[in-house]
Length: 205
Image (cartoon, rainbow, N blue to C red; front, top):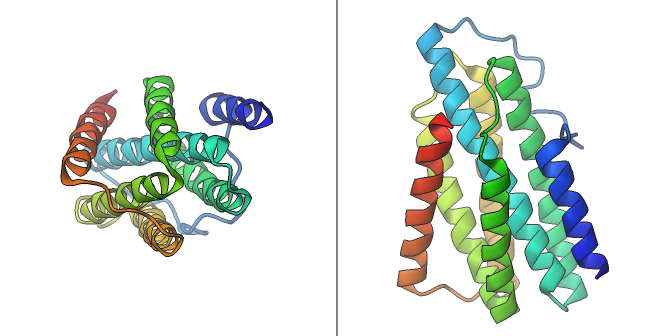
């Protein structure tokens, strides 16, 4: 029950509170670039998608931590969630700086990701970790794509995305080292399809 209450509290803070990072943003003290209206709109849309990804990351890690009975794994998942909270704060800062907004569907994204993470964790810890590995691999690919799409002049956003990609790859490596079981191909394909729907929708809404 304590874990469920903790997850509920985290959900409220993720969705309705201003996130606070424990580490300074990778954008540091970079000056806000001069962007055209189209460039600013594009950067805002891409960072909104990335912000949604971090909302989902909170849901996934917290749901998995709430289910596992392995104290060491629970602490590892919660530590990853804390690091992802930095990402949530950094992407929200970029949205504010770009004059954009978070996705209006964030409660839906959180609920869906929480349910998926809960389901994976109830199967087994190894499957739960396998889900982490595949999720982080897909997120890393997605962020690499954004690095090729963000306006060259938007250095602050590019710095944030590059750091996020490094962290996601590390989380995948940690899950593998902890004994993750690779997910079957149909499951990986379904995850890609769901991610495509989410990113396409969040780009605009």
